[in-house]
Length: 143
Image (cartoon, rainbow, N blue to C red; front, side):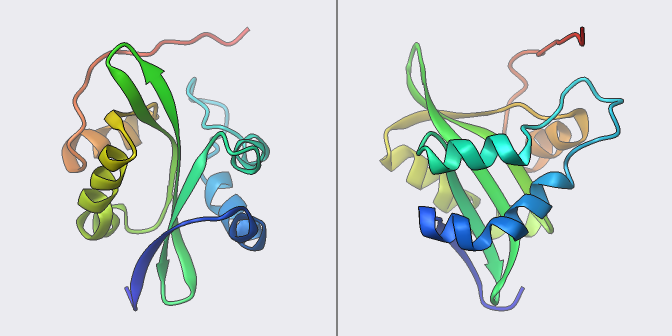
């Protein structure tokens, strides 16, 4: 990565980068065979603009390479950073470069934990590379 950096995006940056962010999120959508469907780009945009969700963006030079969208949600033990989208290239490089800083930032923001809902492929990366623990199985049914 050339001149890698990560930024917590402002509303103005979200608007400016939205075509690129939308493209990364859209790549997560499947052909309908998976029961877990990531949030749609339109839903993510709405939650970002409303201040419900936050976006951390990784850049290589001037090019957006990865987007992490999360929101703080309450739990019995306190606030949890709940990841709704992690999309882009080089997830393992992203983890090596930024994950510890992101965890520190979550803690400084008052979070006591991090959670994520993901399809099996991404969940296996979270478990093997990011330090997540398998805590439950989320099931769903299409009607």
